[in-house]
Amino acid sequence: MQQVIKASFSNIDPDEYLAKYFDDTKPFERKLRLYYGDGKLVGYCLLTFTKEPKVTVIRASAAFLPEYRKGGNTFAFSIKHSVFCWLKRPWRKHFYADTMLSPAMYRAIASKTATIWPHFAHQAPAGIFEQFNSGGEMSGANSLRCLVPVNRTSNYSQQELETLKNSDKAEIKYYCQVNPEFAKGTALFVIIPINLVQVLKTLWKNLLN
Image (tube, rainbow, N blue to C red):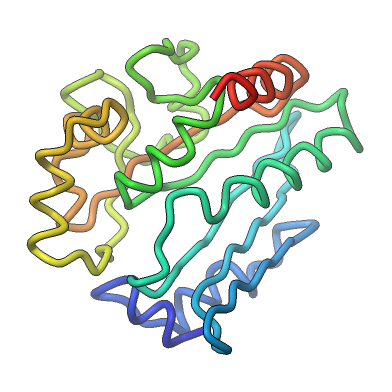
């Protein structure tokens, strides 16, 4: 798994990165999926579930070898287990709330999810980024506290960076406007509510597509 992380990120100690997500004692549950290709490990997605005051927070760690990066790799796995967690405790508020360092990953999730913040078409509830990302930085593009310096960068080639920055895909354009320093170690903090309305609207959105 360390080799996958090394291939995915720069400026990172794989052991420290893994310890942050795998050894943290706060989560009450973890879900891990390993992805294989050509007989070798090519990626993983880890979800952690943590109880905080009056809310359950879902976080994620994912990495893939560059040649196996696909936008939808983790969506079905992540949404399934997030919904399962909510179904066990539907009286509690549940939110996915974590960083996304990749514009492509943001697009993969935002294009399939009914409601996600920040988003050009969805107004975030007042104060929600202060609640989940109080130590983060403000974005000048949307005036939300939705940026986080993470001291690591995705291992994009210069050509890939140019493609992302010049993309005409709405979600990628928005990501790059809100977080123009993503290639220098700043991540976008993303919040996704997990509730009945979200489930129904997300199912409908994906059926239409």
